[in-house]
Amino acid sequence: MGLPHFRFLFLVLVTAIGLIGITTFNLKPPRYEQSPKETTFGSTVSSVLSSLPKPFAKPAASPKHAFVAFLEDFSGANKAEDEGEEDAYYTGNFLSNPTRGSSADPFLFLATRVLGYQLMHAPSTRSTKSLPFIVVCSEVSERKRRRLEKDGAIVVEVEKIPDPEWLKTRQQWQGVMTKLRVFQQEQYEKLLFIDADMLIVRPLDDIFEDNGTMIAPPVSNLTGEVDEAALPSSYMLAGQAQQGSREHPYPPPPDEDWFCSGFFVFKPSQTIFDHYMSIVNIEGRFDPFYPDQNLLNYAHRWDGPMPWTKFNYTWTTTFPTIKEYNMGAASLHEKYWLEQFRVEEFGQNILGNMWLNAKAEMIDFYTRRDAQ
Image (cartoon, rainbow, N blue to C red; front, side, top):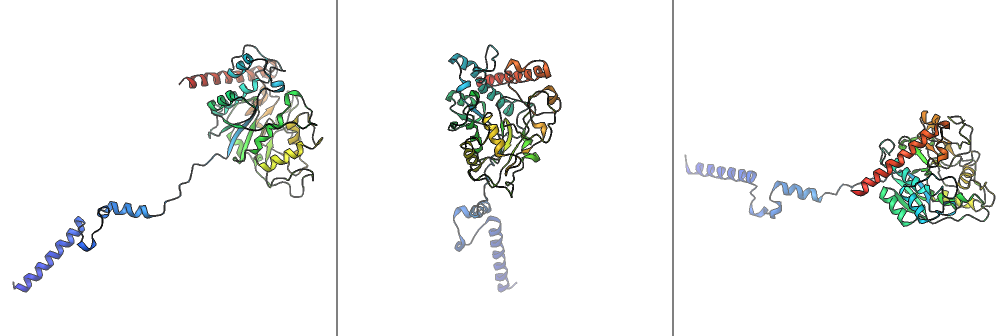
């Protein structure tokens, strides 16, 4: 083999070895040298990825729905006679059965705790979607607010709404218009308001999907009164008719138009709150005997621009009996801590004992949890 051929083969061999070295060992000619962090495939990929726009990190969605109750501290008929009596209501370790009157309604704090336990923790009735339980409070002691928060409730302190001079009602309902502040909780799309005196039988989450709770605009061809504040662009107030005695048909007749303000689903908004407050300040616009209930029935009368709607009758009942329980009612509205509502007639003793069992379970549950 001649020298030229040998030189040619030598150059081919050197070139091949160089290419293999660059490919296998990531060798580079001096003119392409880069910083150490870019000398491996992995670091190069990391560098490229880090230069790309970051994907939008979607925050955890806040719940659109929640349960809400209203609690006002001892005032008027809710006044406890002494500190020892208040402690009994606080802990649930009362020694006697109260009767309707000055010592009855302090149980509403205890009842609110029982309600929260049923909605948040009781295995057979707690929310299946971990929906929040909100307690809107007016002039409630810090001790009680901290206890509710420890139970798991979201406590919202609000300013009391004084009754206008013309609004004369029973002492036990004085100041109840503060309850309207639940409509200001605009961070939620829909809320279920529940009075504290409620026995929950099964989870309530699906009520927000009930056909009766659809949000809609006011009736297009009707307007509000000229001396009332503006109507909202959309609204929803859904409930069931108020019954007047234990002996009532179930399901309720479809033409019953007086709705119960102890259990209802609504769309909160500041606009509708302002609308209600304008009505409160018009003397004689509604019957003040049942203040908040009659106000809402006037504002959402069936022949007005914002008629209330009915959700399925099995979600609740007033003046409950064992009949409604056996027919699948999800909630029963009664003050079962009062002995007069735990008599055998209409099976009230069975329902009352269910509430007492829920109270006992609540006390045991929080006692054990607090001790951990």
